[in-house]
Image (cartoon, one colour):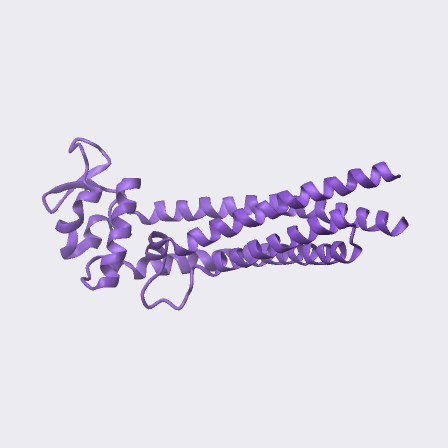
Length: 238
C-alpha cells in the first residue's frame, strides 16, 4: 500500500511540475503575443470598439492560474497535504469547466468573430492611403506581411495603397514580370493577390493551434483530477 501511495505521490509531483511548466509556457506565449506590435496593427482599427486581444488576456490569466495550481499540486503531493490537494482539485475542475464553456461559446460565436474580422480588415483599408502616425504604423506592419506572404493590399490589391503606393510598392514587388501571380499597377509589377485571404488563413491556423492546445490541456487536467483525488483518498486512509 505504501509503495502504491509513494508511486502516486511522485507521479503527482512529476505531473504537476510539467503542469507548472505548461503554465509558464502559456503565460510567456500570451505575453509575447500581447506586446507584439505587428499583430495588433494588422488586426486592430483605430476606431473599432472590438478588442482582438481579449483572448490573449484570458490566456495570460489562465497561464497564471495554471502556474499557481501546479505549485499547489507539487507542494500538496510532496507534503501529503489534503488541503492543498483539495484546493488543486477544485481549481483544476473550475478551469476545465471554464474551458468547456469557452469552447461552447467559441463554437456559437464563430460566425460573429469572422464577421468582426472582416469588418476590421475592410475598415483598415482607409489606413493604407492615409498619412497620420497610426496609419504609418499599420502600413509598416502590412508591408512586412506583404513581403513575407507575397500579396499586395488588403482587399482590392495594390489599389488599396492609393497615393502611398509608390512609397510602399517594394514590399509587394514581383521579382519577375513574367510571373502569372503578378500584375502591372502604376508602372510596377506587383502581386495580384490581396492579403485579406492570407490574413484569414493565418488567423484560422492560430485558432486551430489554440484548439489543439485546449484539447491537450483538457486531457492533462483530467489526469490531474484523477491523480489528485486518488492521492487525497490514499492520504485519508493512512
